[in-house]
Length: 354
Image (cartoon, rainbow, N blue to C red; front, side, top):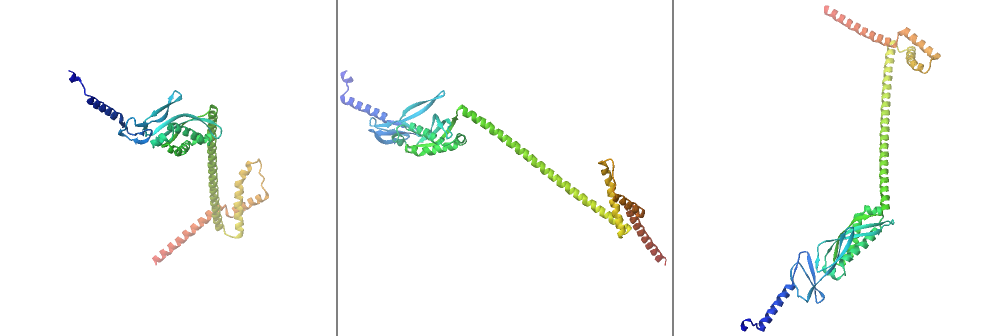
């Protein structure tokens, strides 16, 4: 019985060594996930990086170096900072939503700006050894850069140039962050909070600006309408003047033709010309008498007018009215043409009889 349960010292030592070896292997076996990396130190100094996959380290001799990270959690309206020490360094892009910061603009207005920072750890070795607290350093750098950039702007320009503010902050942070092995992807200004009196003043200013634009638009519309109306009246006046001109020319041409017909009917002697001109003037005067009588109860006919009327009577005694003279001239011309045609017909008949 004693021989069955007895264990030799050699077998015990071998089993102990095997158990220690298995535990060392298990403890030294490290599985690193994708997009993660570990900084390994050997006896307190940097040795190597563990990439994604299965890796072996020597326990108690090689140890991972942890990195300090500060993250914010929103508790109601307040942000609470949470500090953690992580042996596995995440290489993915990380967002840091830091709480709002009071910033004074160039026109002495204090605003509170809430921003978000997107960064990525490119060199884990530098992120661990070049800076004591990488995330806190990046946060403080973002806040100071934000104050510096916004402090050079006026309040109105700050609202109009958010993209410019983001680009300037990112450009100012790239060089110092690169020394820590960190890449600043982008910076976003999320919210800008102003004092109540400043917000009310901006609201009144906006209302006044809209009212001014409405007034300017209305004035421009009235101006355009007045210009269009004036152009229409101008074009109408031009067309009326052209019509009066053409009408006057046509009347003058008609009178000219009438005078020529009358003169050709009664003869073109100097005495007959004066008689025709006097008659036409008399007709024009008689046509104007009703218009003259509208302005008063009595119409005074000057001496020259009575002489002119006398010449018209004499003209009627000599040759009738000008219209009668023209008709007589046309009738005479027609009779003469008929006589000529009759004589030609008679001559033709005599020739055929002979």
